[in-house]
Image (cartoon, rainbow, N blue to C red; front, side, top):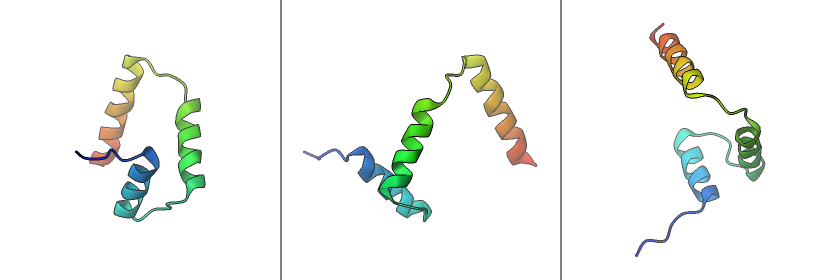
Amino acid sequence: MTKEKSQIDKFREASREFKIDQSDATFEAVVQKIAKAKKLTPEQIKEFVRREREETKR
C-alpha cells in the first residue's frame, strides 16, 4: 500500500525537478493566487489556450 503524498510534498518534488524556489511561502503564495483567481468560462479557457499555443509557435 502506497502512502499518498501531501500537497506540499508534491510541490517540493516538482520544484526540485524544475529547479525553482521550494519555500513554504512560495507554495502559499501560489495557492492564494489560484484561490483568488476569477473563474473562467469554458469559452474563455479555450481562447486562453489558443493564444498560448500561438505564442509558443512564434
